[in-house]
Length: 316
Image (cartoon, rainbow, N blue to C red):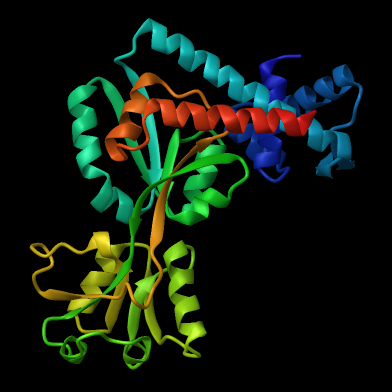
């Protein structure tokens, strides 16, 4: 048994059993992938994949269990490398953060600046995407940490911790009629075209639910993944914007006005998540605490330990 065999099986699952894509991802040939998988099956004495001729069509019942264990073994291999790197040189390495545009643009900059000052030799990468995408990046080992709203806390393979609480606001052009209403109701918002987040974001479902609860249908004329895009089209007077309060800057957004809607939309929570069983290097713990001071290394390690114990208990 070797790591290449394990990676071939894991990548086959990730690539929806398409061996051509598996070979490309692993920089090898398709026959080579098939051979690695067959050799592992022969050594284990179980068939991992269901086949139709040479084509993989699914996982066998024992195959599903094998894939789970392979995931743990490969994760521990990465943990071993990171642990050794901590002892070799704690000031260098790489840290990849997967997050949404709003978090990257408005929440992360202070933490990133402080982190780069403390660890100038660490390569810091920020990948942006919707919550489902960034969660998958962490689960696949392509990112160390993901930061988004509640959605990422629903992934079974992640350990999520609450960081910040926020609420939606409405933004309008400077002379919009809504500004004359001291405390607009949701019915007032429903009278205007709305520009807000794409449906892949948790904030959008909250907005839809609030309108549905009032028996109203929001007239969403444009949706985007980017808070700045929403504000751009509000400036063009194409509608009112509904976005995260942290995305409004009084100075930079001087042509717009913000209306508090805490009485309309429920408060949301930003979460920071890591893969269960992950080994985080020392500088990763420091980044987390710089971003969310309540998440000290002790708190994060304790949470990861509890999650790992729970996972081990489930497999017994």
